[in-house]
Length: 333
Image (tube, rainbow, N blue to C red; front, side, top):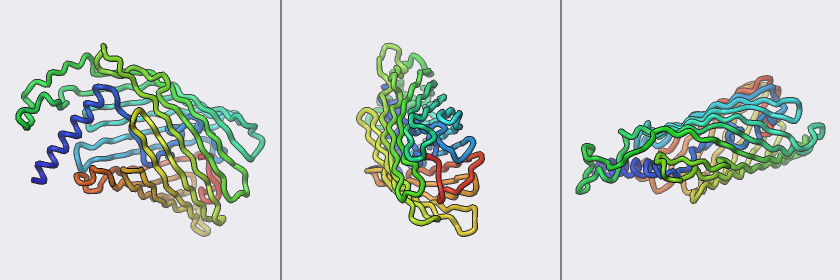
């Protein structure tokens, strides 16, 4: 009986996933460690740090393995400060939807500091990204409603679907703005930003006559860096994303503790994605490397089938020339 319910759930998820794909009303892939690759979160964060010469960030996320074929998302980004007020970089992001559907993003990113770089109290930056999104699907692997007969799935039945194309290439334009209080010696340094993705809302349907378009995504994020002692810092933060009718709210707290007489800073915390998952996070900052691992404990209506298991995620960030630990100081984000 459990096997029957599980198989039924798998088919429901697959059908739902590809109904979304073909009608082009899907939402973007997301990360639980949404700030590990800052320029993926907000273009205005590109190269906006002083504690290092350049930054390389990578992330890997694997989710829903307990229900169906794994959904994996990976990203690799690079950025650096340039001539005091500028930041340049770029990133690639690949989302593999159970090996049936794939989305690949390639973006070039730039940012500019509006505030005077010589002052050390406030930082206001804007950013812009240009690039492409490539989507492709393997239609011979798809499952459709027409292949169900009398309540049973029959792969030999025709699906009555005729995709006119299996690959899409779309332009991508993103914009962001960010404010951060960077005054040294303060107990609390707040920060916050806003970004818009898919500004041009390009057509993304696999059917040429359909005019379905990639919906814009709006992202609001912020928090505060709080000094407890010289070796202990707290970072409460939030994320709010909206795309068509889908809303994601993520709130939580991350802490940093520098071990005495050491180059090691321990990282730990927990986040809650509303009506979806509890997300514990652990990590370590050793010299110019930052490594974090998180795990989504599913709390949504799917927990009956996922048995609480959600997504496993890793991130690794390298700062060339990083001179202080995260517990003492930190980049703008």
